[in-house]
Length: 338
Image 1 (cartoon, rainbow, N blue to C red):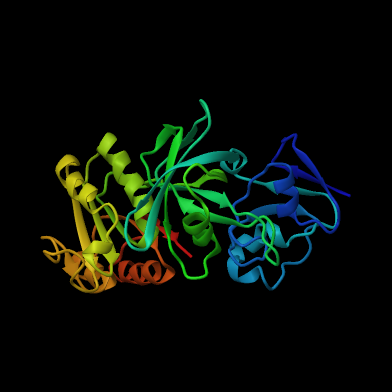
Image 2: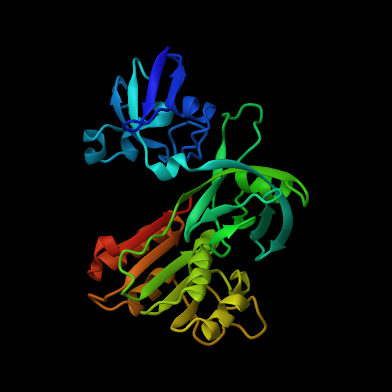
């Protein structure tokens, strides 16, 4: 038996046997660290800073940890089996992530590949959340698969305190999360999730905001835009969204109406080919690669804050363009959807 203390002066203690990972022990006590790989060390989300007998860093962890993080004692909780007492240093926001059971009350096909799902908490229960935050859906255990499997989904509705939450699920061939939510869950079914986690906190609210997304990356941007509609600020917002055709842009009409209702907002759909609607591409849209469009639209040394949401290819490609344009890394926020 080992003892696991959390934070300085924190009274929480967890007992674990030598074969139990930190992640398993924390889950058993309701401490919901984010993880989407079932403890396989393949997502890098369950980082914790540890003091004590945590053992040597494993090769599986190394790609997820910087030299600075390693020097500070940061590890992946799913790969650590403490040999003695340890103390964990966790962000208090993580300790605030709670488990909830919700009921599915609405489903909508937003595009041929993206389904919007609305869930409600029971009774008078509600959660508080901020723009860009996400939840982790708990997947049912299945034979041959790791236990405690969870998948992250960004909250797509207006931030604040609410009984209802909306997520957007992109169908992925062979994806266990999208398969469960799109094919397995029906109206009236209950779903368990933990959260909220993360969030998009602007570091330079005095600057214009540029949002770039593709696929289900539209979900967190939508929450940012709906929040901006309620609390408009200066600087303006531009949203570039990549899709195969305009018919595969989620919330297209809502985004067009936001151009009228949100001062300084511009929506730019970027499609790889024409089609999808009878009229083709609406005014203001572009055809081609979103990375090339970003390169054309952002000036060298532009004063702008950027929020990138989408596949690793989109995020990495756009990041390279922004670095070449001289945009400081502190003004670029990333949400990689994997």
